[in-house]
Length: 259
Image (cartoon, rainbow, N blue to C red; front, side):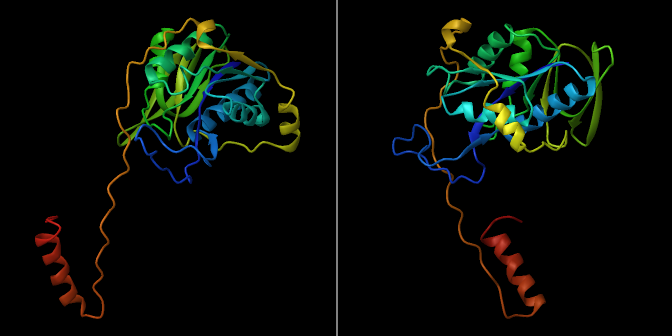
């Protein structure tokens, strides 16, 4: 079973984000970067499929600056076989359309049965790249996947996906793109032997020119701003419940305009 996992390195969710003085982006000094959590589900699922069929390969494909190598090495330590790192200044802040084009170009140079993506990245939260990638590759896609069962002949897969109010079961022909949702699995930790082995696993380097990708942006962020600070709440203490209820209801009606 050959799986290609698209992986993005993102700021740790516990990082305190600050907008730079020009309003053109965030302050990157001191930020801790990690694998996008939804991509971790993708790595784990690819590894489980390889273990199930006792053959194949798990390839990590990532676009990003030099530091993205750390995220690729982490996935290799989990058990992936090799990595592909697309490192090009014109792509490092690219929009989802351009990123999907670059991923498709790199994927087109690889062999795969399934392409896994996280259903969204927790930094920009677009949630578009996986779907665009499938369109560029001209292969089927299923998004928000929470369960994957690949047929023994590796020609089809039955997957469950989240829909509003329930689950949807879909049969899809391979090759395809699947975007991973929380609940698909519980990602494993990298073992010490895995970390040691990861140091020797190959990471192929590519750039936009080698992939023949047009890096002209289709989407540009004009300005970054922090959310408005919320006003402090009010406390009503040392009074009877009935009296407090009347005061709170009046405040909700006259001050907050909530009722």
